[in-house]
Length: 332
Image (tube, rainbow, N blue to C red; front, side, top):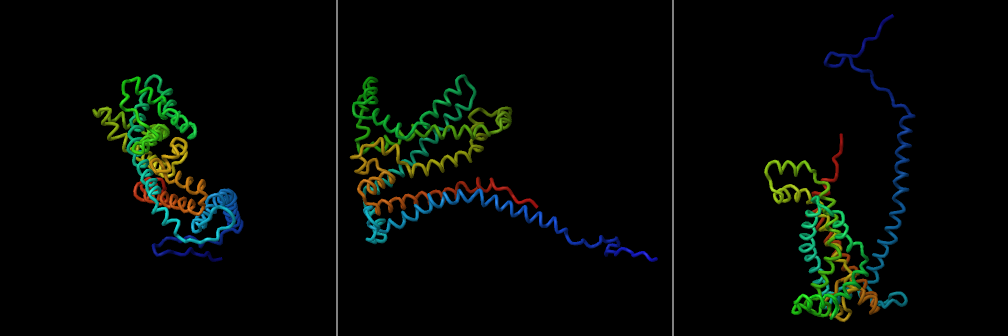
């Protein structure tokens, strides 16, 4: 009886016998698990996809379609005008004023709300008596409904209203203006109201970011002799970068699409002259109330395109490293 010798590899050692075929049961179980995973993914995402298509993509498609017609909302659109509605929008000085006002609100929100929110957030991040109450108070304006805020400030800023009476009581009667009727200052009045309304959201967002700053870093900076301001500048603010950029993104998109507060607070006659109009209020004034549905849809498409381009550019140049940092590498 002879024994079979193992096959030698080039290094002189015995090589392992060739692996046999994998058991069929293991392969079928893995295939069944993969199918079950895909069934779960399809089952969980299909309702969201259906809702997104029905309530986002389909209305967008109809808006683009109707924007190519001169249509007053009665019967199917038949008078095809192509891109005339878009050309008319950019030739209307009121729409150009609305574009300018949106730009003022975007820049003003970043340059006014940002520093205020950052300063208040750094203050409220320190420990002192009554900190919880102050955090609650700064967030109250944001949770108020936009319509409530608009009506409240419209009553406060009306001619002879509470603001004017307070200024006169303080001996500052020379500062009294027609806050909602003066064509030169009404947009700045709107910016003030919007800042009062939405700065609380920025503060809460920054406080959430500050809570993720490791205290060990600030303690190490203090041990090295850094002052409180130096610690905030060289340690806290760089770590707050992602949170600040997210807030900037939300602020830009919200400022481009702002409607509720402007619509309720502003005077219709002043808004119709473009002094306090935004793209959203212009769309409603000229699309809904003037019953120029095709033209209103064209303005809606312009608003969407501007917001979409702004979002893409911001993501491409400012949010890119944050998004890339959130993606984990593939493990081998």
